[in-house]
Image (cartoon, rainbow, N blue to C red; front, side, top):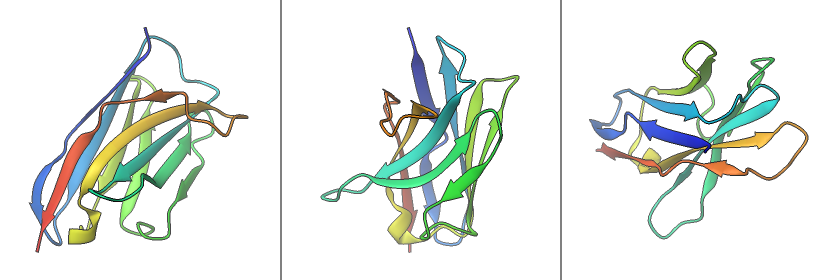
Length: 119
């Protein structure tokens, strides 16, 4: 059974930092793209960042570029999202997801971890 389990969310003041983790299990994600998404109350889910598990190539939404960094640890089967210089508008439920590299649809999703940034 494939599982993606997020952790690391919490309450932080504006300007602070958090590191989210996405622990994977149930299969190897070589050949997959791992993504982070977020959804604020009353808003649609939006893309945040992604990383190609094999190549390590990354891509970011403009809203987080320069502040967030996505990485993966092959030995721990874990993907991270380092979030610096947090803003109140970063407040959302953050999800980890996975898709096959040639697919456009994310097939696996975690349950989410809440990030709240106070002003």
